[in-house]
Amino acid sequence: MEDALRLIIETIHQRFGVEAHESHGRVSLIIHPDQLISLAKTLRDEFKFDMLAAETAVDYWPEQSPRFHMVYEIYSTTQNIGLEVRVPVNGNALSLPTLEKLYANANWHEREVWDMFGIKFEGHSDLRRILMPFDWEGHPLRKDYPLGYEEPQFTFNFDQIMVRKPHPKS
Amino acid sequence: MGLEQKAGNMGVVTARLEDVVNWARTNSLWPMLFGLACCAIEMMSAQASNYDLSRFGMELMRASPRQSDLMIVAGRVSRKMAPVLRQLYDQMPDPKWVIAMGDCASCGGVFNNYAILQGVDEIVPVDVYVAGCPPRPEGLIHGILTLDEKVKQEKFKNWA
Image 1 (cartoon, helix red, strand yellow):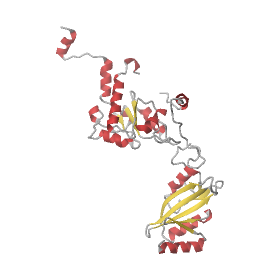
Image 2 (cartoon, one colour):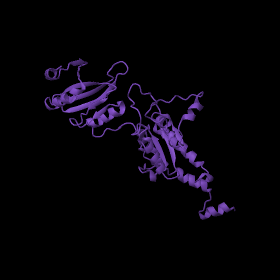
Image 3 (tube, one colour):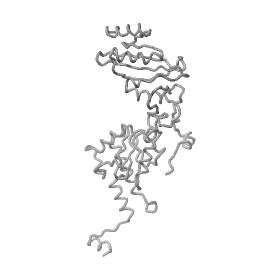
Image 4 (cartoon, one colour):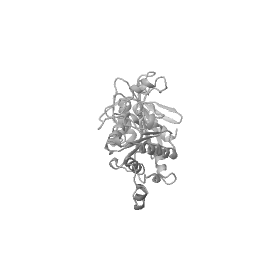
């Protein structure tokens, strides 16, 4: 870790009480959902982390609980430092404050997370599906969502599958 | 001297109406620009100078469905794109044909999941399937020539 990053980690640890985990040259902080907005504001305003590089979620069902980890990768273009912030979210209390007011590109990232995982964001201006059709039911990237594949058609089950396949009428 | 020789000297040729109309249709098929994914690159290279599609009458690809009569579905069709594709197909005037180019348009290809249509024949009737991932431009040309043979066999009584 470089010195600038070390200094930032120290300051954050004193103010918010979060530990930094380091692996493969990347530093990640695991925080509570309540600290998210204030930590992001501090990073953006005080430490010049001006770019939200990525925002996704991971589903660790059924091994871990809380089930989802929201992952924010925040990057500073002036100092060339990247930081990863993880927020564990429970499967039953699925809502987080939105980062859209701080980083404008969080709009589409949060729409994608809502579409794929079902994590709601309070204060988001336009939370609707972005990858799947608008009337789709279910959240596909959860671990308990079925794969949705079609059975391979061999000669012995050809007829059973042809009956179930949709065909156009004209 | 038969009637045909006499007529031929005057510059008149007789043929069946089916043959003439089918010949005209095959030699001026205008494809609609419908490249969705990687197969579009092969479709573009088939249209370009090395493997020329203009020699088959497809000088350009019409972007508007109202002015085209062949839809080459090149690429995978997702569930979100499917109603759009059907609407464009409905906007094409008769007679129209569909070539499913590549594995994804024929049967879903490598993508056997919830988000990709398992073959575009779930929503539009397909005339020719071209296999390949992606098919070579010569493969697409072979598919177009197969469609030409199919069009040449269309009968008078089947026209709308």
